[in-house]
Image 1 (tube, rainbow, N blue to C red):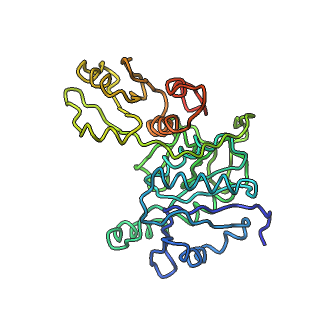
Image 2 (cartoon, helix red, strand yellow):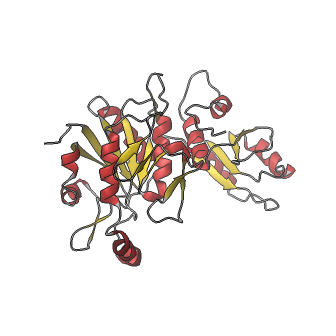
Length: 328
């Protein structure tokens, strides 16, 4: 019986790699794997009343389709839950947390995301990495990450956050930090919602929205993502543009976009976002966005192009500071 009887749904969508006591890699590829996987962490049910929900396997491709399924699960279980822990692939954990942030706005239940240090079921191509992590940390970090996530999920948070290693980071500020094996994620402005020391310390002065919960169940729109290099033409199949709802371009902050490229944007007749964290030069037919993380800008654009919000233009949604995503 859980001590505090908190009901926490454990949503599994990759990122489940864990070593058993014999050093073998276990992960969840299907519902049938959950029992053995949970058996490696018997302490979880001491912390709360845990209910695992399988969404996708370790080797499944993570993207809009999987995010859509996670949103559906959380929306369906919200009235039963005290909180949600989402375990997902480490390389897409930031995007997944942002997708949930924009589609599940002002949800009253806390959503915490975490992951194992490695993703995928293949042991052979990760043997060296796994061996190094095992020797240094005694595992792949998943057990402690989930323990921390469950404890945090029972507390209120303004919107989804990532717990990994010793840091609790709001989704809109999370960036990859590969210089640190323990804390692979950091905050772009060094502001954290909490840290793990001898216990879990969550900030007491967090700001909470009083607005009603808004759940957007549409699948996030597909957008083409480009990285502009001055002097290098954009080259891609024009027919491919028909499969996208918009175009996202990271540009140089110190010089205007070349005239030929500005003309291309006008011909596309697709919503186009020009992004740089510092500043962007205005271009006719494009929306400029800065002072937020690149991941936030991308996922916000995918949401804004799919949310079907009445009486709101795409440009207005992108310019509005909806969740405090603009950091300056």
